[in-house]
Image (tube, rainbow, N blue to C red):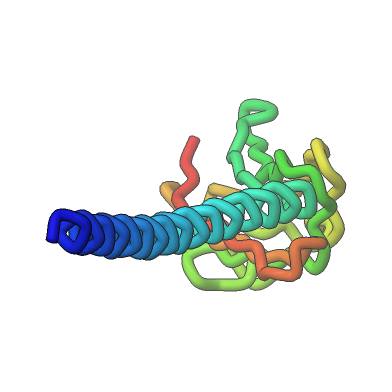
Length: 155
């Protein structure tokens, strides 16, 4: 009889051990799944950062400035502070293409290609119109996205 009880206790202990082992296996699988999910999310974030860093190395960034260069003369400057050249640069002043705006000086046009860390300018006649001016600059660069600046310029 005592040996039957010992056998039953042994079987119960073995079954309990098996149950605990299966439970530990299941929990371990859940923890691994969570770790894999977190790792996938971290990988996605890192890939996004790398893509953004690559895009920054291929992006132009144009900034305008209106500067007085003599008592009666002003110039509109566009500076490319990006690391890529800006191509097909288009400028709107108060919604009007720069070449058609009353402040544009005939025969003096902005370059349509502006290299990195480069500044270009054109004469800007403010006798017939006064700042501030709304300005929109659009360009293409190596990033594959259309560059755009919107803002206001003044003296």
